[in-house]
Length: 160
Picture 1 (cartoon, one colour):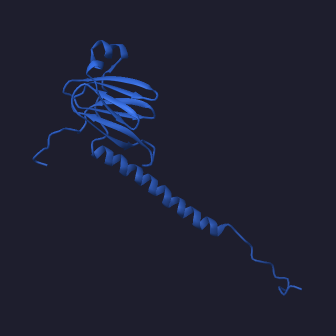
Picture 2: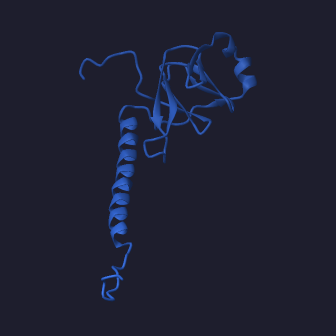
Picture 3: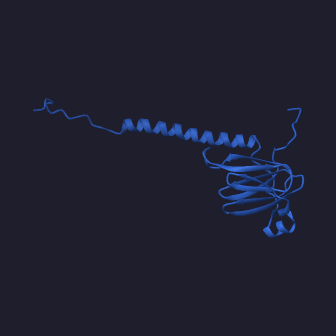
């Protein structure tokens, strides 16, 4: 025979669970938002995000007709081929917009490429920023984009 003398048991509620889940979700959400903005600002500060005008694009036939294919210099990065005719290239992974700092995409900067061909699993893209122009190319979600400008140079500023 139980010795509870008819006293009802403690009522179990989810209040304790909610008091743990809500603050934990708020902390994780805050971390994701701050992490995303930190990495996006870092990529912009380091010059991996170019705000210049888009590079003029070319067709495959125009690229071949101008003889660019004969003078290509290729760089393979993240399974993609980035080619140029002249100058130098430097590549890095930059944070993908909306990825909260967890997703990246390849970005390459050129010192003076004249023309650029990007070969990905999804196809090829051709750009002609011109001789002497800095260019920044990014491949986000399988789509290549090129912008005139960037920070990559081979010269060191003695005043900085």
